[in-house]
Length: 331
Image (cartoon, rainbow, N blue to C red; front, side, top):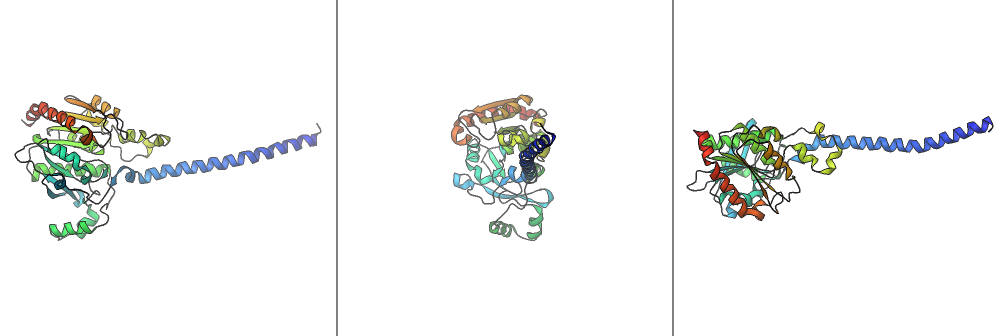
């Protein structure tokens, strides 16, 4: 081949290669930018993905036949928690209920009715940013000098009570505030208080029980080992470096081995949001005394509706079997 033709052939191949590779480089660069953009969005907005509060109360305990009192509980940084105190006449048993990441306390009335039917007095509360619970920046400045009725009116007129997006730490602080309300203001004995949490509330309940081993017992419903594990359970998120991006770890698995009070784990075998195996792992990592109940045919949110009678028997048996343990700790 003449040298001139050889160079022409090389030039032609180079031109073809450039035309082929250049678009691939552009596509690769765009894909990298898009991936980085999604990672940045996940990092920046993860709290809004984790915490999904709603401001409006859609139901009250009275609508399911439970007498109740609206209570306001002082919280960290001059915040205020809104809660429902539901006393059960003649009962010493009290349940401190920590709800999950969606909605507010009013989305849990059926679950609350089940617990109340077991003879528990109940304190259910909203974390700051949920329902009518308010954070310091607006609450303390706007409500200074107001009476209780005036505060209630203010809350009713607000269109968005999510004045701050919660954090893992703020939910722990709110759980602690609810505990202090029961033991200080209501003057209840810790040995009469059962701490219960559902889903994300289970992680808050575990943290609270770890801080207060003098509580009677702990019940954890449909909860996760860690937030990282819960995120990885959604296959789409496995594409991203969640471990590096996550700022709200909710690491219950690291705490349960140090629990000293009796714990019951309950989980539906049809849970599509939090895999059932997470309760198995929490149970395995926990010290005795401990129990695990897998509810047949139950999803993430319907344990009261689908298996209420069975669940009631499980909890009642758990409470009866741990009465001695609670009394020993109190002594």
